[in-house]
Image (cartoon, rainbow, N blue to C red; front, side, top):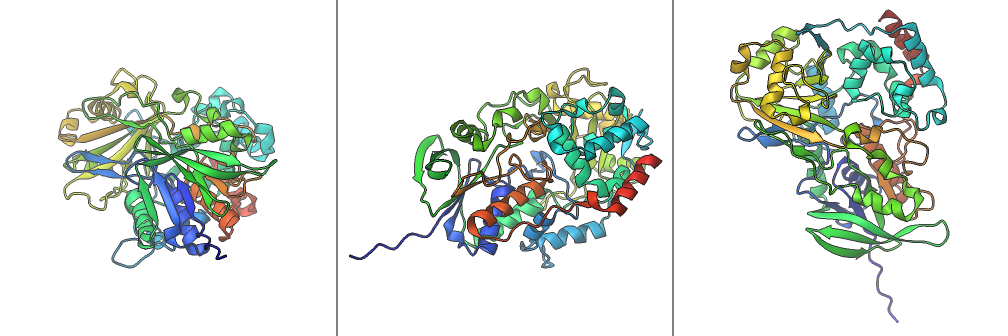
Length: 525
C-alpha cells in the first residue's frame, strides 16, 4: 500500500505587527523554512501594527507614535541587517539607521520648556531620591511583584526634572509597574550621561512604517509568504495529555465569518498576544476622537487564557483605560513658519532635538520636530510634526478642558498658548491639518504585574505554539520597544523551528565604568 506523502509543516502567525513579521524573517533566514509555508493573519488591510505611518498632504499625515532605538538593540539590528532599505544606495535597513544618525546626529538643546521659555534640565534629585533609585535597581525583582512606581518614592520625587524627563521620554505614569521601571533603569543606564540631551537614542530616516515595516514586507513578499488580510485568529482549540499542550485547531474570523483551520503536530503557531494600539480612534481639526470601540485584538489572548493558566492573566493589563491611555496628534503644515520658529527657539536644526516637554503644562504636553521628510512620499512644501499629552485627562491651561475632549484645532491652540506664540500662531498654523489619535491601551504593558501574569514565549508544555510581542515574559528586557517584540520572535523560532538563539540582553548595568558614569551624572544634577 502506497503511503501518501506527508504535507510540509506550515507556520501560522497571528497578527501582522513587527513580532510576526520578524518571526517570519527568522523562519526563512535562520530555520530554512520556505516562504510558501508561512501565513500571517492580520485583521486590518495593512501590516506593521503599532509601527505605522499613513496619510497624505490632502488628509494629513498620521503616525500614532514611535519607538525609540539604541545601539544595544541586538536582536532588532540582527533582523534589519538582512533587510534591504529600499534606498538606491543599497544599504540594509540596519546600515541606513546608523548612516542617518551619523549624518544627522541628535543632541537636544531644548529638552524642557517652562513659562514659554527653555528651562533648566538639571535632574533635581535629592539624596532621598538617589537612595530610592538605587534601592529600586538593586532589589530582587520578585520583591517588587505587584508594586506601582508610586509605592517606591515619595511625592516630591515626581516633581523632579529627572522624573519629568524620564516619564515623558518613556511614557511612564506613577501608577505603572515598579518592576518595569527597575528594568528600564538597568537597561538604559548607559544613556544617563546624555539623558538630558536625548543623546544615544537612534532614529529612523523616515517614519517607522516606511523605514522598517515596508522593507520587511517587501522581503517576505519576494519569498512567497502569504499575507491573509481581513482575517483574524480569535481562538484556538488545545489538545494534550497531562501538562503537554498543542494547538489542534485555529478559529478564524474572516470578514465577520467564523472558520476553523486544522493544525497538525508538525505545524507551528505563533500567537501575538494583546496590542497597545488596539481600539485607537482618530479625531480631526474640528472634532475630538470618538469613544473607542470595544472589539479588540485582545480577544485571542483572553480566549486562550480562559483555557489554561500558562497564557497568563490578560485582564490585569487592561482593567481601566483611564490608566492606560494617552492621546497623540500629528500635524501637517503647509508652510515652514512654525518649523523655522522652533529652530530659532530651540537652537536645534529640525530633526536633531528629539522630544520637547512643556513641563508646566496641565496635559504634560510633549512634541517632536521630526526630520523632514518624515514620509517617503511626503509632498514638497509640507512639514510634519508629532506630539502627545502624557496627562491629557487633566484640564488644559489655555483650552479649559481635558485633551480627550479637544478637537485638533483646540490642541494647536493649547500648544500655541504654551509656547507664547500670540498673534503669530495664526500664520504658523494656517491650513494646518491635525489628526488627533486616542489610544486607550497604549501603556497597558506597563501596568503592575506579578510573576506568572505574562506567559513565557514558549509556555511550559507547549509543543507546537509560542507567544510573541509585548505581553510575554522575557527576563531583563523592557517592553514598549521594538527590541522586545523582535527578541520574542527570535526566541520562539529558535525553540520551535531550530533558528538561531537570541543573544543575551546587553547588561550595561554590570559594567563598572557605565555605573560610575551614571553616578557622576546623577550626583552632578
